Amino acid sequence: MPNPKMGSVTTDVIKAIRNARIGTVQFRVDREGVMHAGIGKKSFPTRKLLDNLRAFMMSLSDAKPEGLKGKYMLKAVLSSSMGPGVVLDTASVDPSNAKFMLESSKLGGAAKK
Image (cartoon, rainbow, N blue to C red):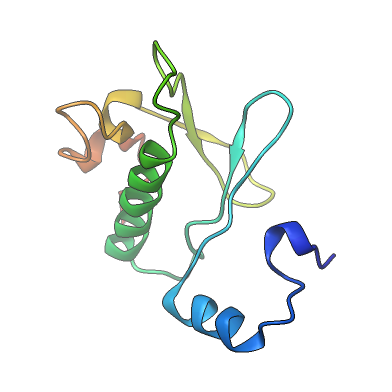
């Protein structure tokens, strides 16, 4: 359903079209603190999916409140809309870690062709 909070209902149509063309991604958080966002489609090449995952994780890291102490991300799971989830190595997808996106094989099989 269209929702003004998610940006799908707007009076500024030009801005909405511009944001859609540059690939702006909306993400949401549920009551338990679980982040939901789409990073691509099954038909996307593996490299594009990894680039989208990297960009999403960087924006998620930038959105972290400065006063928050401790680990911001406890677990990462990648799944299709209705498919089973694949647990990712948290160190590989956490931008604050030195191992961030270095080895695609540790992403839990998500980077395999």
